[in-house]
Length: 90
Image (cartoon, rainbow, N blue to C red; front, top):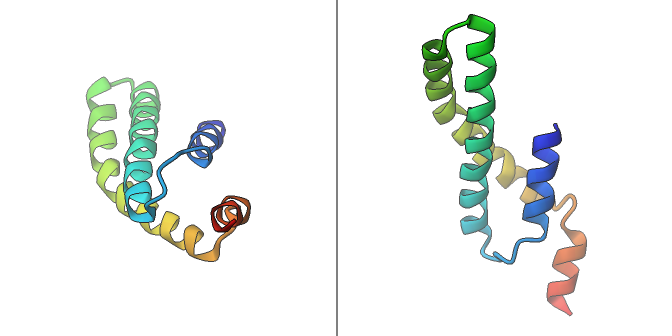
């Protein structure tokens, strides 16, 4: 949750305005952070760095897809973006 919060704070102040470009870049940066975390945890729990790499590799693709659609949904409901969108209209 801490990593996610920090990632969101950085993106909230981003200068990228194109919504689709923003969603794609944000998806990949978050997935990189999440995959590293998963690989480390899986290696620690299993005792095998190879198992950590395998689990991290598999979950990368499934979570990229899930996160992209999650982000599109949040953008559509406009939660937390009202201030920045209102500033653009002024």
